[in-house]
Image (cartoon, rainbow, N blue to C red; front, top):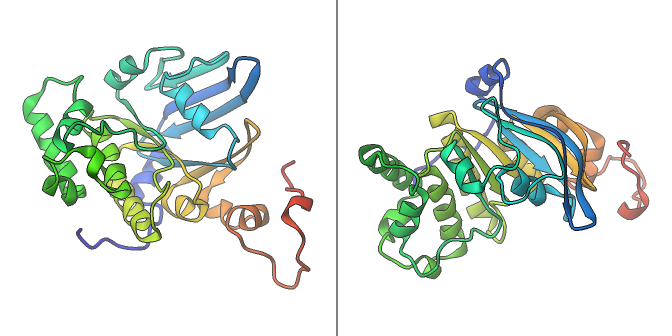
Length: 275
């Protein structure tokens, strides 16, 4: 793997994105599993060329929100706009054609297909062969191990290699935006760092927007430009990642940092200021 810089700060490209219109905009989205409401009036946006992270504890509704955006679930109410079009309730396959790709939690590669065949599944909506070949080679540059293993069954890859394959498969759809759900799940700290460096490279090289759900708040905040904090199906805080990392509640509850000189308290007894 090519050596990459370890410092991941906001780039000039992302700064320019702040002046552009939103590529993705959610307005008062509510989603439910039967009678159980999982998303409660969520509004957020992702600008062109921006990496946005969505943080929250297990059960906060992050994965459900991504499924609602990508057409796997239909919202009960609210609207989803992508590239200035209302895409609320559209089928997932139609959204891929519109330029929205989803890297699901748990990778979900096709285990019996080869690495190459998995990648070609990502390009199933395209017929521009020359461009597909170009994007395939670009994916191999990001993830050289996939080139080495292209004829191997995907089910025989390691967890980290399967995560690389899932991201590369999404790139083969040539999306404007990628939804990524827990890319570090089950990976070692070394592989997690490598994956997130490549995520940043993908954003910088192509200007693709990324909405990132991640449990590792520290690396997510270092990688992304803007962040939303989600609890109990609601957005409770939002700000640039630089400012979020300075907030006491984020440091305490998401980054594991305690204020010096303050007597330790049990975490379950403490209240976040946004409540």
